[in-house]
Amino acid sequence: SVPGIMREYRGHTIYAGGDDVLGFVPLDSAYDCAQALAQHFADALQKPATQLQAERPPTLSVGLAIAHINTPLGHIRSLAARAERVAKGDQSAPDKQRNALGITLAVRSGSTSDIRLRWDDSAAHLAFQGWINAFCDKQLPSRIAYDARAIYQRTDFGITADPTLLRDIRNAELTRMLAQAYTRDGIKLEQKQTDALRTRHDALADLNALANELITARWLTAKTQRDIGKEEQ
Image (cartoon, rainbow, N blue to C red; front, side, top):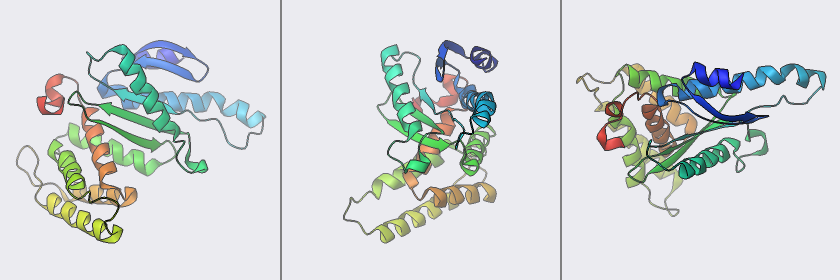
């Protein structure tokens, strides 16, 4: 059951009916919980969809909002609705809508960002889980994510910028940044991490999207306020 899955990930269900679910779950188990809910939904409807000869099986769009514990519940609910809209992807091509996880991260400093991962995009989820694991194992420093965002922001020259030139500038800046990156223990960033970051950046073709994925993954590793760090709240 949905409440049972939520409890398995130390969460609490507020309500669950049909394809609507609202609940709370800890940061460090939120991503796994979202995946489990989507898989449970797909498994439960696979047989009926087959019997009805549905052209495409039903899928679950999951919106996950990350907010400070002191954030008013009304605002958290609006953030969750925003995350759900991100997941549904109504602005995407028709064949890329729905069937996704949308995550909205609202930081107390005022920054709010979104990421979207389609459930059928295994490469995206593999990369995202890789960021989470790397942050947990301290193989990636938090600074990587924020430096990537800083590169994007300082090279945001507006719509008049030549797209090819802008891409080359950002690629060069990303390469320079990764070459100078070290873990918290002062160890040079491993080549496999550098390669993974560049591969994902090439797939996204958007440095800001990569930065948002990294920052969100960093938050999803947190078990305590100390894990997040004062500067990231």
